[in-house]
Image (cartoon, rainbow, N blue to C red; front, top):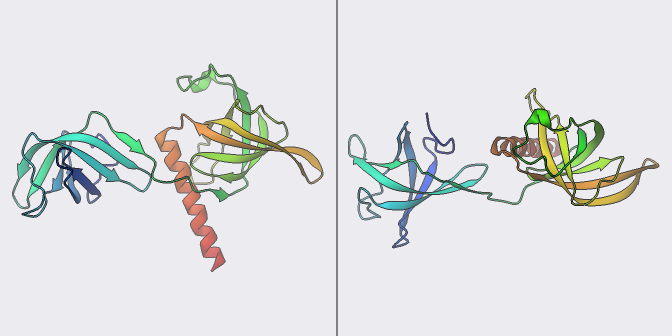
Length: 223
């Protein structure tokens, strides 16, 4: 099984020689337990030697991944392949500003003490008990409407039931960036902007997939 899920067969990968700056873009062909293989470049393009250290860049739908690796071996049958070692460290770079979609979802929340860091077990954190709803949502944050106005800079624990076919709601931490008092249907409410913190990669990807599915549905309805 692949050590890194973003390394997938037929996904594009760019290999860069750090010393010369020369590079080539190719496709991943094999993903094994100890190494992965790419199609070697055409004759006359960048040629690598076994043991040479390079930088690799892989772009997935969610993000860009950069890492250093070493050419482990070459194979010539039936096609010319370069086999690379798996990296020790990977840098994940968000490709874009998060796209937002307008969506009204009920959210449960509770103020969270600063000592409840990312290492806090779920069972140790207070359960969200107050209710509000979202105005819009992205992979990096949300705009909420709440009955109470939290302090800017404070931390909230949010329980968000995403209608994406998964049973488990999303439980995330949100840093309060903006609080604006508003009258909605004659009632005192607060528009609260939060930025998600310490969001697991799988949770961020789930949010991004949900947002883009909503946007596609909106475009279909507009036609």
